[in-house]
Image (cartoon, rainbow, N blue to C red):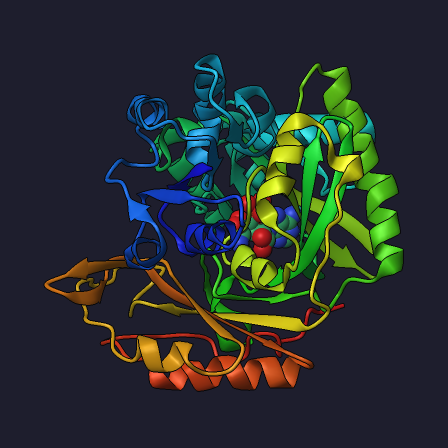
Length: 423
Ligand code: AMP
Ligand code: GLY
């Protein structure tokens, strides 16, 4: 089989590595990929958002399966385009991807199906939103309706900050059309958990859970990022929560989508907040998480390729999915300054030495090859994953590998999987 993975982050490197291990996989391409995907497969220099070029590439090269990594091409309808050309593709179509691409659509669906989530109000006029800033309970969470590269959510603690966020999203259009409408919702406290499940219409199969670490610095300090590390399975998950999740979130969601004539096929990753024993949905993601995937896939014993095809073909009931019970800890190495401004082009040393350590896997994110060297090319540069029988062992292995790796300005969190989940 010829496989194409769309995207260029650590998640895509993890997908490429896992899919390449399948006995069914012959050739694997990644568009546009990074220095890591290039070592396993063939990078194709097409942007993940250039839908017509990606479609032409898949058709022209006889690609048997395309797997979409990021949210933007899903929201733009890449799956609809591929399917119209008779191409097999993993991911939800444009209508189903609204679950992530419109937070208001997701809120309305959760409201209709009584899925527990934060109380929220929706605004399409900045005057009304600014008015509400005067009386809303603080802190409040303000969210752009659409996709904003993970930056469209702010937690504000005072009225001036709330007004500033509303103006920036709705009037200055900091995130373009994504901020035409906004949500203001109650701020939930608790521990977050990323659940990953394969969904095909009304059936679903759990893959695994992970706990992301969103803040830039140790002790959950500093600004929000795309994710600075993860631990899988999530240390705030158990069988009781899973059963509660199935009955109060997953089943009603799939019923609601069916009632809306929306066929979801792909990976669904609800982001949850857990308070005492209550689970509430923060958001639905319609794709694999990053860095969650870099912690989840190294634990997956089953071949991923037939699972993705079974999802597309609606045969999820019959597949076996097996995970390594050990713990995976993933630590992100980021460029100095990330998530703010950072420099790129810094040579990376020690990758081979790090990767040689036991139970360690290194995934590239913002890297590229330049003058026969691997150099940094993005904010999140590498994801270092290690498996262990305990959190302590997995952490020791991951941080031992990190000790081998150097680039100018590298920063990372020292407390991944240690920082408490708050529940
Ligand atoms: P979202 O894109 O909706 O997941 O938001 C990104 C991040 O913002 C989440 O992972 C949380 O850390 C935080 N967040 C979102 N909604 C809330 C909320 N209602 N209460 C507290 N934190 C939130
Ligand atoms: N790590 C969070 C996300 O992928 O959305």
